Image (cartoon, one colour):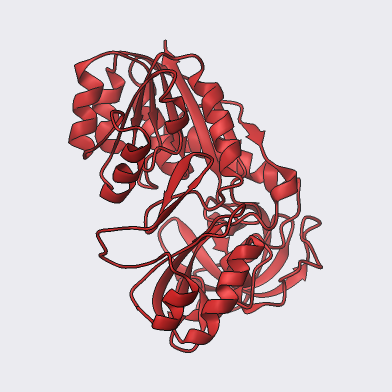
Length: 391
């Protein structure tokens, strides 16, 4: 039946791919249809709940025929929170192949760039890897939001969480907390950071490294020589972060000068400060303050205007950037004409990376390599490292 038929009826759809956000993709007549909770190879019954000129969105009602890539005995398949991970039942190596494909297709569709995508993972850390999470509390439940809502789904524990993060969750659950609770654990130590809006005596007794929203002073601990600062960005897995640093180091090579933009706590450059010239810039005061304690002369607080000035004022062997999900659109003009031998771009968003890659390659830069890193197993998220060199 046509999706434009009235009244609304159930439709049968074969899922042939997956989108950047993790939804399955099928076609109804000439229209692309996105269906959450489906995998390539599924045949499903759906009901359309949203339509635009170019696409449809369907609610999954029933899986008529399961994909061969679907894990039938996934450890959390029967949990209400499973939908939050999207790919909890997507098998390997299919999951790896689709992460590469999503990245490559984003480059081709948005950036008009065709390139082979390498893939790096740590198979030993497909579960139990997560050391940072945002839990949500409504006074009764503590867990994750249900997809596309602010309804809190109780989380008993999670196989993706490091055991210490699950222990923190278990201790927090009976406290009747409200709002967002940012939790970060040291997987090789005893520290647990909590960043939240409630101060409870019992909570601080058990978790002394707790800070409230707006605190000027932030607790931190060192991991692999980098300060992990409460309430500021760090990778979801401090263990898998080692893989990211290794691949980034290979891309930086033997550069003598390194400009690190959106540097945060110095995650990708602090370990270079003793052997080469490093200048790191970020707008987050707490992260920069902690990085300066480790390397006082190498880090400064600044916005994108500061970054643009540093790009333009001198030559650098390598410019490294790890922007937020929105990308680095405001720096593209300066980067396009930068006097650098290489640009190393770390991204967690294939779409904004593709947009920025298109801007760089419209000038004097050529994308010479692109690597997908599996920093978030059993979720559709993918990290990437793109290396640009002068044409």
